[in-house]
Length: 225
Image (cartoon, rainbow, N blue to C red; front, side, top):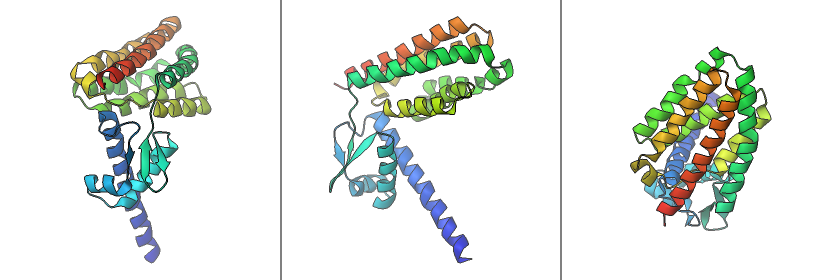
């Protein structure tokens, strides 16, 4: 019985760690945690109303994703993403995702692609509901699920890592301006092209979409000045 209780405590601790991580990501996206600033685990714990331990664990998870970096005896610094970083991330994603979308369009069945329509619709609804966390999570699931149809797990892992490192922050202003909705609707356009078997059209749509994502980054940087 003692072992079972211990496992229950571990699961509860893991859930709290995940909840704290979710809250910290939300703060990053909303721009409440600023790039270049150092935050202590006890300070963040006080703001969140939890102990410092799950905050420290969650911050270590974010550090592995490249979102923060430990600062000895001080806490964690929010990593800064430069224009050069964003350009390089976008270039890598374009090199990987555009031709992959073309291959998936030629190989995937209509049924496989239609299964992703609810996720594409969720992206749009989340944008309209101003749910930035939900928007980004649905966007992540959609893109990685499409790439997974290529059968290349390492490719999916690589793009997943690039997405984490090029996280969006300070999106509140863009959301209020309604700019996320048009970007969200491109997912439905992409899916329709793929279902129609239009590989060149799907590749062009994907390239245009990634270009729009990069422009959203630029707008986010401008709005935070």
